[in-house]
Image (tube, rainbow, N blue to C red; front, side):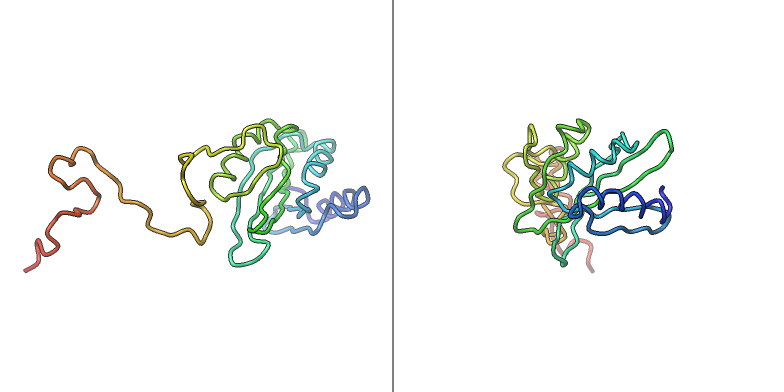
Length: 180
């Protein structure tokens, strides 16, 4: 991880090249994070790639509910030569959750962006195949958002279907059974 000084130097170089790209830096728990403007994500990642951070290790979605901008995307980059890691973060409002896709430059982001879309509803512009990857195509809502209803659907066990007790909690069972 870049130390605090290294992180500021890295962010300073990005700011010098484009004053609107870097919004903030955070160094906590030995980890460096650069907060960027959503419209600049492709440019920032390309600049970091040129500086040695050639491996995009992961793309994650985050929900900062109730804060706005509410939805976040985190990109974990690795410089394997220097054994150095940096996180690039951005945030978008829930009413316009659009971010440029980095998939054309980082093919490993393809399925990870689809997962963030599926779970959080962040739309990645110019993604080659943006569709649900974990949930059914007709599923409504985004299950990893913090305001998503908890509880979900009962799990069906088809082995018990013949007796009419095919749910995890016996729906057809006597609620007073075992109570004296």
